Amino acid sequence: MKIGIYGGTFNPPHLGHLAAARAAMDALGLDKLLLMPAATPPHKELPPGSPPAADRLAMAEKLADALLMPKAVQVSTLEMDRPGPSYTADTVEQLHEREPESELWLLVGSDMFLSLHTWREPERIMKYASVCAFHRTQADEAARFAAQKERLERDYGARIQLIPVPGLVEISSTRLRELLSQGEGREYLHPSVYGYILLHGLYGTHADLKHLALPELRACSYAMMKEKRVAHVQGVEEEAARLARRWGADETLARRAGVLHDCTKYLELPEQLALCRQYGVELDALERSAVKLLHSKTGACIARAVFGEPDEVYWAIFWHTTAKADMTTLEKILYVADYMEPNRDFEGVERLRALAYEDLDRALLLGVETTIQEMIDRQLPIHSNTLAARDWLTAHGVSVTL
Image 1 (cartoon, rainbow, N blue to C red):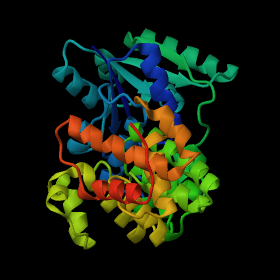
Image 2: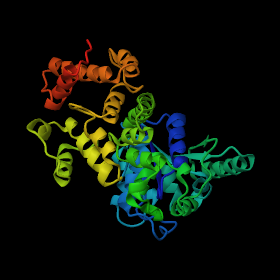
Image 3: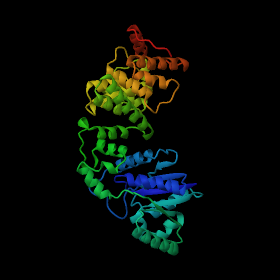
Image 4: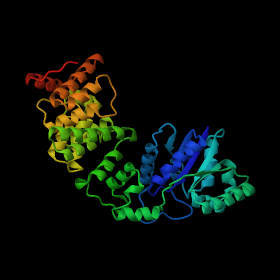
């Protein structure tokens, strides 16, 4: 097994780290990549105002998740769990003891590679791990890299592979932290990392969560979910905006509802129930045991309490899973957009998409009827609000056939 080790303070992890990790996975054919935040870096103190280790770890986890390879890319707490400075020589030897048959690759950036011979016990590092160095494509840097490669191979018998990463992000962590404290720097960060920073007020950001512009709201929402869910949320936002334009609803509210509708999707049942108790949401017997029914309610509560969204957005999110009788236009839009956004792929979805722009009520009824039939086929209970939505629509002359 080939295992890559990518360490650093990740203070914060940025798009340069992401590009380098992707390049190493491809160039080396790694079976596993370990992102390894350092507890106490030996070469320098963490600057004042740095987040606690738990936050740096959480941001590294966001970066790992962004690679969409959960079985291969993991975050390791090995250095954080080990007392004292985070010496790389100790790390690679410890990993070798755990994985004696595996081929270890230490991944380093330009500056780290060029100073590798000055690290503590470089001979021990290169005894247990090969070295993969990322570099830009400038001729002057290529010459320095070639000279360092020759030195390490000669002096330590090192195995070295150089990987050019065109367009590698040209920013230091120090400068990025400065930009963040000034309300800038978003373009250097993956959205979920940026959202985590805003949600937790790191690096002096102090965002007013109740008055976020759409880009910041998106980042915060994405930070609360798995990366694999983001494409769906983006699809719902865009579909809701198109439907709002078609049916005369407020496009901005439709977008904000779409952005936040799944923000609590990944909370477990105890957390969902705790939020319902906190915000006074009454639950029936089915909802208390069916976690899939709760994220719409808790997501609505977070949208209002944390992000200051108005009642229109609250109720659109609240009903987007079950629907209900006598829905508002925005509520219908979010329900239908969630059902047929561009990433959805099921029999009948194209019919639903066409119908959504011809007759919103008929599209809503088709979605509700489809859900009811699916629950019947799977021998699962149907929520009373879903049945009430169907009955209200049919009582008002809306009809559709499956």
